[in-house]
Length: 387
Ligand SMILES: *Cc1c(COP(=O)(O)O)cnc(C)c1O
Image (tube, rainbow, N blue to C red; front, side, top):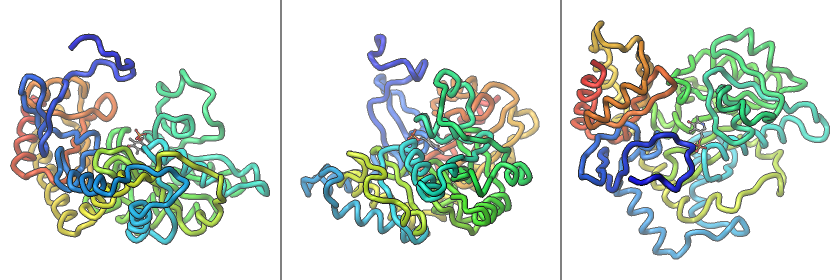
């Protein structure tokens, strides 16, 4: 293809795809690729998913794509209700992307924790390897100096701790100055690091003790990815705020924040808004996706597929460049003793699409309903790309 008129923020991008079906993408020359990226976790039901197509068609029948935030629509009401029913008592703010959901959650946390009476309770504690998006607030709580440096000053008052370092967190989380702690229960972009359940529980009790909001960012690990509807379920604690996005609307842009009752009660009209958020079309599609991924049999299928990946990884052998394997459900990271970019390139030559998670980790993030034979085929191709 000729030089792209799209801005060069993504570097070299190989591949111009023209069709998709299930876990396959097809390029302009008719070459087929098995997709282990699923749109970086967005296309959780695969490409051309009937559930998504039917929801879009049904939504179009109503003639409502968007009505603005001046009015409520039935799909957005139903979606918010369905999210609350599946999480914890509270309310939902509908946004358009992951970073927007994080940005909103940071504002809501400050509104709840601080306000005019306690203007200094505005700081945030985030974690090494954490990723929360590229807008100014989300970027400030993201542990990527290279992404941050060119754009300083960012939102001030952010402190970072190592996952698992309870003492450091106790020293940083202040009842007087901290508004919120933000963490991904499974860190995605930072290399697929599941956060120990015991640490999530420590964070929960510390935040409760010091009146600090706990934000779980499940934009990547939520909505069935780990084999339970939400990754935090394993810890048997709930956050004060939960951010969702990537797979939520089946490939259409959407983000959401679920706020616990107490946080929701602190929010006033005018505190936040978005023109597009919670449009009728995207909300209808999100409701269909949510119902699909919430199904117990569907989630069992994710866990079953996860065990196939786990067994495959265990059999890789000492000669493979994989030094460790981490993951849950269908979210896996293979740590290499070499560059992940090389394996990504070699996999492509084998007709397999994978994505790195940092310089040394290859991520396996297939559709949650990937047919077992496609999963096994992809793992064979990945093994060939590793040797
Ligand atoms: C992708 C991601 C984001 C950012 O989402 P965008 O839609 O790209 O803004 C935030 N948090 C986590 C955990 C993510 O994986």
